[in-house]
Image 1 (tube, rainbow, N blue to C red):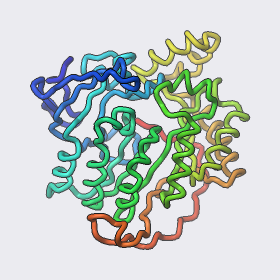
Image 2: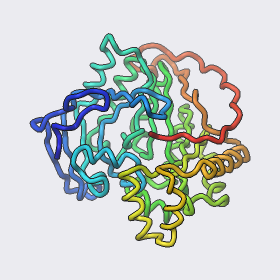
Image 3: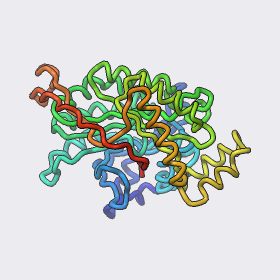
Image 4: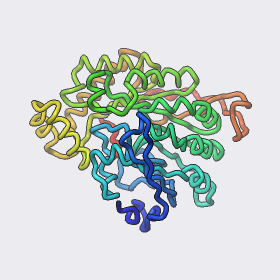
Length: 356
C-alpha cells in the first residue's frame, strides 16, 4: 500500500509514514473480513478543493474506506490513492486516524484557524461500524464544542445517538446541523445496495429521536436510483416516511457515478438488474451525472410530495443553536442564545446538491 504517497489535496508531503501504520483484524461478526489500518495522521482539517460544488470549505474525516459498503459510494475513488482497489478493498480495508481528536483540538487552537464551518460525513461515514470500536467522534465533538466551532454531520449511522448529549452541548454554543441520508425505504433494495448500513427504518427512527431531543434534523434523500427507486409512488412513500420521522427539510439527490463508483455500481447492476444496464449507459452517457431534465423532474416531484406532507425543501441556513440550560452547555460554559425565528423558505429550486 502506498502509505508514503498519500498526499493532501492542497499540499505536498505524506500524511503519515509506513512506520506509523498498525494493521488489525477482529474476529467478531460485525468486523469479520475487515482489516483496520491504524495510523497517526499529521493533519485532520482538510480543505475542500476550490473546484468543488460543496457549500463548505473544510472537512474532518477520521476514517478512509467504509464498511457501509454502499455499491454507489462516490468516495470509492479515494482508495485508489492508497494503491487499494475501489471495490472490495474500499469496503474491507479501513484506515483509522487514531489521533484525530487530539489533532483537531490542536488545529482548532492554531492562530491561523478562523472558526470556519467543518463538515463531517461528506466523504465516508464517520459513524460507520468502526466508530463503535474506535470511538473517535466523542473526542472530535468535544473539541468542536470547546472551541464553539460550527459543524455539520451527514450520516447513515445510528451510532450518532450515542453522542447525542455531546451534539446537544455543542448546539448550545455554536451552529450545528445534522442530516440523515435516506434515499429510499424499499427493504429489498436496501439489503442489496447498502448492505452494511442500518435499515432505512432505523435511520428514520434516529431522525425522530434527534427531533424529540431538540436537534433539528434534515434528510438528504440520496441517492435516488434511476428505474429502481424513482417512480412517483416510490418517491411519495419515501417522502411520507421522512416527514413522519420529524425531518424539517428534504433534499433529493439523484445517483451520480464517478470513476471508481461507476465500475462497481455497474457491475452490481449487471448481476442484479441486467435489463437496466443499457438504460443506465444511455442515461449516464454524458458523464457522472444524470441529465439535468431528469434531476429537475425528480426534484420537482420530491418537493411537491414534501409540501403535501408538511416538510419543506432543503435549503442552506438550517444549522442552529439550542437554547439549553446552563448545566447542559458542557465545558463551553455558556448557555445558548434563544434560536432566531426561521427564515421564510425560498422559492423551490430545480437544481440539486452534489456531494463532490
